[in-house]
Image 1 (cartoon, one colour):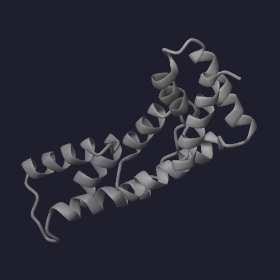
Image 2: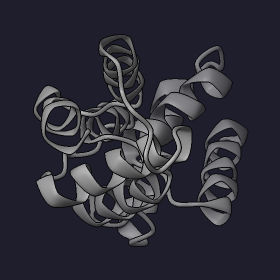
Image 3: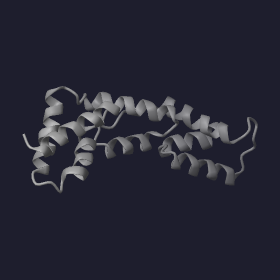
Image 4: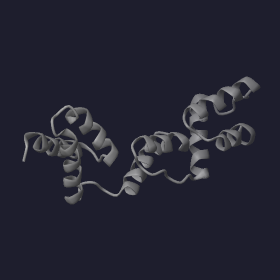
Length: 148
């Protein structure tokens, strides 16, 4: 076995030891390190298939749901979450409108006092804030017109 292939396998083990990665993430990270090598692309593919055979790469749907759960705890909107998952090469997750509304209201209540009187400009500011956090337009509309 060539040194490049061994190094690629070691690198994939190091990456997977720190946290779970999607296949696309691994391919990207290995590509940056081994693409200039003589048999770099072959080594990358062999390392990824090695990790798959050893069952080190988990189910993408499970990985996506765990990542989504982490982002939900950070009060990120479903648009942000699904965009992030797509970037990582993972499947999108379903939205829960009640959870989205709860997260959006938590963000608004964190920024404003309990009995704050919202002007038109304040509502526009809230809309921009929620949109920048990745909330869909339906959730933003519900917060602005029904909750405030």
